[in-house]
Length: 144
Image (cartoon, rainbow, N blue to C red; front, side):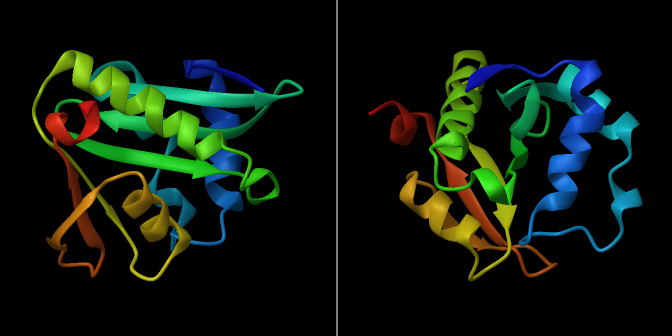
């Protein structure tokens, strides 16, 4: 497994992984066009990928401007191998090197993602209008 910073040339494979997931699926794949991914990994924040045999099997993207996790997805065939945990660590380590501000994310309730973020130390702080649970992570909680 190779973990590295996401590049614009990775977007096609990132999109493949995004559409493979069974939870937090997109109702319409066109809702997240390639140009949005490019904007998030090159201007709004940063992204990371995990490669196995030259194939991207997971990715994470954090939005520094909006102080939120934009995406963290792993190919279901590669679940439970620590990939999500490492992508999460890389993303939050980088974020808190840039700022000490809290970071937020939203995820659907009663999903493996909800359990994952709870286990990583995120605090539920309410919900969004779309029904997703709103989580936040403070610098103090991440760094201890």
